[in-house]
Image 1 (tube, rainbow, N blue to C red):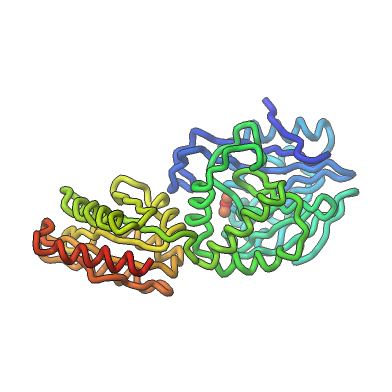
Image 2 (image 1 turned 30 degrees about the vertical axis):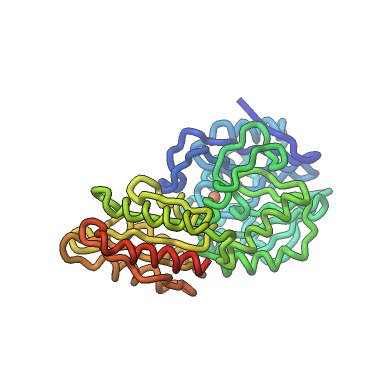
Length: 398
Ligand code: FEO
C-alpha cells in the first residue's frame, strides 16, 4: 500500500523506512532503523530524484504509481549510484520505459557495472551547473565527488531552493511519520555516527562541497537518509556540524576510553584512570569495551571528543583483534587532531603497544599524552603513581 507525503506543492516524499535490517552496508548496526529517501516532483514533466534500497521496493513502486496517478515518468535523476539508492532503477525502467536517466559520466560508468542491460539506455549526461527544466522547476546539477563516492552529485531545485544532497547531511534512524527535523526528537548521536563512519574519511571533499553550496540560498535540504531540513536554524545546524567534522576538530573536550580486556584487568585499570580523571574535575568521560561495543559507536564518540585512551591487550603476542579493528577504522577514517594515551597489558611477550601506536599515531596531528602504563597481567601498587601521573597529564592537556 502506498505511503507518501507531499513536502512542497507538487514535490512528494516517496521513500520509506526499514526497521528490520540489522546492519547498514552489512556492517553498521541499525539500532534505530534507517530511512531510504526518494522524491518525485510533478510538473509539466515528471521527475524522480534517486531510487531506494531493494528492501523497500514494494512500497516504493506503489508510491510512484500513486503519485504519478496515471502519468508517465519523464526523468530519473541518479545523484548517487550506490545500491541503497539505485537498486530500483531497473524496476523503474521496466515500468516506465520512456524514462530518461539523468546522471554524470561517472554515474553511467557505475550504472553499466551494476546493470549491464541498461548500458546506453535513454541517457542524459549532465555536468557541473547544467540545468534541467521540467516546466515550473529548474534542476541544477552540482558535482560533489567523494562525498561518499566519486560519482556523487547534488541537485539544486532553483525555484523552491531545495538541495537534494545525496548522502550528505543524512542520518541513521527511521522516519516515523514526521519527516522534517523540526518535528522530531532529532538523534544527534545517530547523525554524527552516520557522518563519522560513512563520510568521515572524506573531510577534504566535504569542505570543498561546503564551499560550493555556501553561496546557494537554501530553503530545504532533502538528503537520502534521515529527516528533511526546512528551518533556517536546522540548515545552519547541519552545515555547521559538517564544517566542524570535515576539519576533524573535536566538538568537545572530553575523554573516550576504549579498552580490550579478556579477564577484566585492563578494564579495571581503565576504570581506575577514569575515576582519577573525574576526581581531577574532568567531565565527559566515556568508557567502551571494544569487544562489546560496535566500533561505529566508539568512532562516533572519537569524532566528538578531544581525547582518546586506548587499553591495549596482547593476544598471541599481537594486539587484540577487536582493538586492531577499531584502530584501523579510525585510521582509515582519517581521524586527526586527537590526543591519545595508552595503557597496555601483557602477561608474556607481545607488541600490542607498539602496534597500536603504529596504527593510530601516524594520522595527522595525533599527539601522545603522558607515558603509557604497561601492566603485566594486573596493575601493581607501584604503578598507582604512574596512573595518577597519566591522569594529571590528560587533565593538563584538556
Ligand atoms: Fe546512502 Fe553512499 O549510500
